[in-house]
Image (tube, rainbow, N blue to C red; front, side):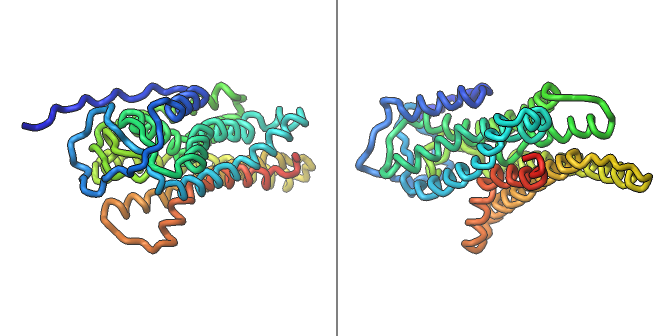
Length: 336
């Protein structure tokens, strides 16, 4: 007789990064975790095996420790420009007021959304030197929640789409918008991404060979059609931001050359710097998402890329936060 089916857990509720950080700390500090002397045997299981009960044993795999160390280091290095921006904004009210709805907003959102995942990777790199035992449900919830943050924070980058919309409205159409507009567009563009990604997990198959933690109750199947829909969505988000920011930058260039041609001494240099900084910030995630798409194609069609390509793909997204903020510092360096 076939084993009884296990009901799938409902998708986790969307919560602010601070709350998710508390949840991460709770799961990682739970008394259910303890060091095991035996590694789980997962090589003889297939992804199509029936899921185990949610309270069954799962393991955080020490083999992922090297990747966790590298990725957490890249994320921590990416915070350095954000720390510099925070100190500059704290010391200068001019910078704080002038850039609060653009560069400062993007820095805060990037920091808050990536922080739980960074803390998780840091914990993994420092503590998981052996197989650590937990439960399947805890492992699955962590993988879902942190993977959602992974994609929506430094891959999909919906906040750059929010900023690009508000900048286009204020610069081209001359309607003053601010933080409320940014947050509104951010929520509108993020909600479908989060919902779609969680649904991809839930309709996925049980997975016993996850490199980070396993077994899992469900995990996305790379061959499923919904995965392709998801990648089209996350490709479109940064590309839309690139298009909108390019329009804003082109408009400002046009206005500037018109004023210079008329003999005007007035130059909106800061506006132009902001436009190009935001354009670069939207181009960078578009490039990193290209590498993610390449990895998906490799998984679906069973290709064997060279080792250096794998390393480039695996690290590219973790560089996004630092590259974004560095681009901002370069283009608006006159303000600092």
